[in-house]
Image (cartoon, rainbow, N blue to C red; front, side, top):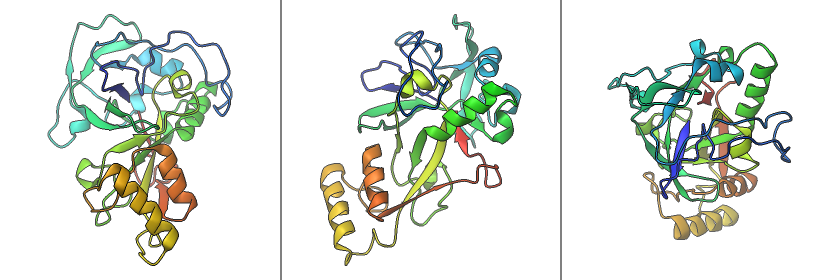
Length: 252
């Protein structure tokens, strides 16, 4: 997944403005820091090459809904075109057209592109694949389903607000492919109970700061806000089964 901030600098959920990083970051899975594929500011979001995916532990043949140069009406996150202007050897000539807005861990606006989804067999069976799965499980993309919808669906029509990406813990140096676990966040019964003083105050503070979502409940803009609500019992976090039995657990 690739993103850029509202300053128009593309810094990537699947790319970095840094070229080669050779340091170890606290909290990041061991061995996850490596040379990253750079993308020049202002250049279009091209999909990674097959070789780069394999180098970083992902079998490109097993990526679900991988962008392929078409724009199916029922799968807008994968809308893309063939574009032969790419000159980066770690990228291929498929450029993503669909762009969606969200927030980074500090609540700053960003815009991102999706290259595909991952199931367990998307990761290669070697050490690189094991490391890629560790990275995917370490970084969270928070998705906010509507209370009346499917609690485990990432469909745009099912969301009450934009996603929040937890870009803490060295994301830009540690996640060369932009792999994320889809974490679904819903307000808990306690969170919606006006007699629960702790949650009522927490939600009121969020509403005053962030405004309301499509459900009429407070928007969440920061990763730490998700953490705080979950710790207080005001929100619940769920993931799909990591065996893929409930659909893809990870996003690229």
